Amino acid sequence: MAAAAAGAMAASQASGLAAQAGLHSGLLTPFCQPSNTQNARAQDRVLRFAGAVQQVLEASGEEVALISRSGLDLTRFHLRYSHAGVMLKNGSEVPWSVRQLYFDCEEGHPRLFDQGLAGFLMSADSPDLGHIALVFLPREAADLLLRAAQDRPRALRLLAATYSANAYPFSLRYQNCNQWVAELLATAWGELPDGPDLRQRAQDWLKAAHYRPTAVQIDSHLTKFAGGWMPFLHLDDHPVDDQFGLTLQVSMPEALEAFVRARWPQARRVELCMDHEKVLQREGWTPIGMGCEAAVGDRVVEHLDGLAPERARPPAQSGDAGVK
Image (cartoon, rainbow, N blue to C red; front, side):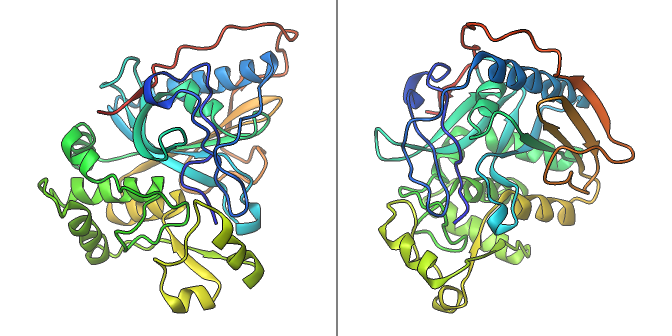
């Protein structure tokens, strides 16, 4: 199944609870394996990509945004983005950190984690092709989301005890990272007070607000049953009809964006992609193609083909920290 927390946290950038936390997730992809080491040229590209993303954030004049990142190759499921979080200008050690759910491999359960933008982008599996989508909200929606995201008791109350990469969005048994974001949106926009049943009330609100998870098509029963031997994939929370129909309902970034767009038509989306040559920027809800190919109206905001020769480079300071 498509993952909630994709990629691996860069160990050199992680601090506190996230040190050396592997976050691989995919239908048949093992979790908690060491990430591929990026060479200096790849790090240069990603850091320049992060700089371009931060320029968009700063120019927006906003303090909060939804952010989605490509990580795993999910083309077999016709998906690009695997991991979403809430981008906060303030509230961490460095400006513009991503508040997100991740699976702590050392401790064996999910945690909330604030990660700097550079570290967030380096967590993706491929340093050669990357996509980021930012959604900026109208003032009312943004203020409510900012208040909920910075309310640590409520944000932590929404954290489930058990992680599942393919968690069913209307069950309390498991949770993936995108589902935590969905429930945070419900808590914010439903103005739900804290309490032991907050997750249930958030899910009830999402149902009433016509939130539609992503319908992920499983290509075979063999693939479905293979998930039974994977420790972070589960079927016991999904309706039986979905299981036999080879379609599982899962919270994915595309579902979050569609929900936001329907509820807040004034929301603005900016997508950026990076390949070996450039960083490309597009405004609007039409996604960039599966590569990083410009269309009419797109802007090349950074040229990457003039990178310096490979060299040793100290890790970037990303201000990563656990949410307590």
